[in-house]
Amino acid sequence: MYLRTGAIVIALLLAGPSFAQADQTKTNKDSSSKIDLTRRTPAAAKGVRNSEVTFEQYHQVFKVVRKRSGDKEFAVFSAEPHLLDGASVILLQAQSVAPKGNVTRWRCVAYKDIADCLGVPLKIRYLPADTEVVLSAVVIPKIELAQTLKKLARR
Image (cartoon, rainbow, N blue to C red):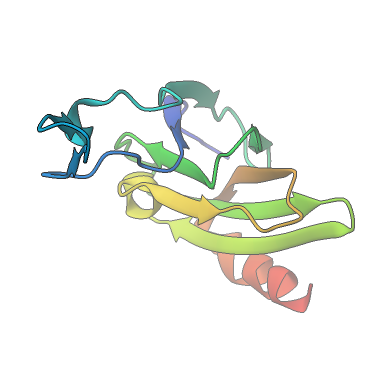
C-alpha cells in the first residue's frame, strides 16, 4: 500500500455571536451624541487554532476536538487545499458529544483534495446538551470505500 504523506492543516475558528452590525447607531435621548456600534470591539476575541495532521498509513484515525466554552454557538472547521494520492480518499465526519451519547452531524468523502470537504468552512451549531464537537478523519484506499460506507450506514 502506498500513501503519499503530507501535512493537512485544519483550522478551527472560534465562532461566537456577532455584536456589531454595519451602519448601526444608537442615539442617546439625553444628549445629541450618537454611539457608533460598528466601532465596538467584540466581547470575546475570535481566534484561530491550527491542528496539523500527517497521514502516514491507511485506517489511522485522527480527531480534532472542539470543546464548548462560554457562549460559543458554533464549532467551525476548515482546511487548506491539499491534493490526495489517486488511490486514496479521506473520510471526514463530525460528531456532537453529549453526556447521553454521540450523534453524527456531518459526513463527507474527499476524493481529490481535502478542500472538497473543508475548503468552505464547516460550521456546526452546538446542540443544547453538547459538551464538544469532534471532527474525525481517516484515509482509506478507494477500493475499500464502498464497503466502509456500508458499515457506516448500518450504525
